[in-house]
Image 1: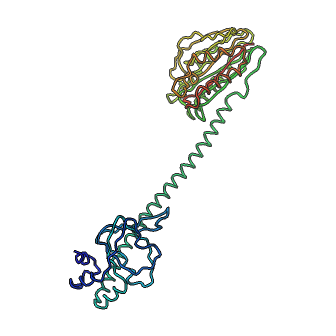
Image 2: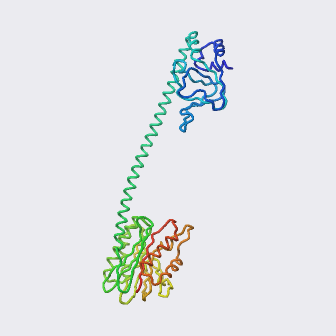
Image 3: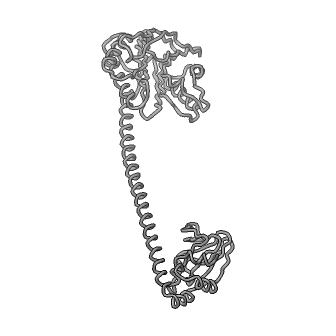
Length: 411
């Protein structure tokens, strides 16, 4: 059986049967236990080995964190040919047993003695080493080709990541410019009068939002008060918001009623608008002398009024249609008198819909409860307190919609 093992090895394949038996008689047998090292990287090398049973692993950096398994040799395989022809050579790797293993070993002097009797062994050795060199070259070529592909893929991915990073930075710069433009549309400060205070806050869900508000001076001791909410979010909504704001401001100066302004603006938007975007709006005119606030509501959240005694009332309302969907719209038009000590509170639906960590919306009742505790508080502090209460309620949960607040406090 062992003779057949030698005959399967190319180095000895051309030798006659009786010579194989003689070689077996001079070969040494070596037994290895599991994980026993046959030789280590850098050791002198003088022996050729044939595996009779078991398996051995060929390692680089054996015993170190970066240990690398190069190969596993099994029964019938052999290794160490170079030690037979290179005197004083050193092992280039470590060989360690994987379980128990039995080996036959042939020393360099024994091999030289055999080549003197059988010169054909030299030819066989050259052939074996040439085949191994060819196989190594082929494997090296394939390995290099594969690594080149991996490097090219890594390079392509790096280029794509760099392009994405550049694009991301460009978009972030453009978003910041858009956010700055949006903030420039909103009033830097609100008007101050002897009989009324005004407050406002806005909290976009994204860097650029679609909500709007304004409080601006009109003729004849009147102020315009505006709050709106564009469908969807982001840059397109901000652009639409800017257009709606500009149109309302332009028409408000003509002296029309709040309802007339809204209808004219709606005709402009539906004529100009090429998408399905729309905006809910509440626009009103406050007469500073009479304390009457006349407003038109186009699909927006109905306002609340905080009475001097601390009770909160939702203003009676009828249906109203958002701007930008239909040419002819119905509006909810109301007139409210604001007595001293009262606060008129306007908000977008982001306030009611904002959710806590359990998915529970803030809701109208919490708004009314929070507002009821703000009797006698000035308009800006009322808006600040409402927003702080909302943020505390959110407790870090994701904000899905812009939140905008406007308050009118009668002195």
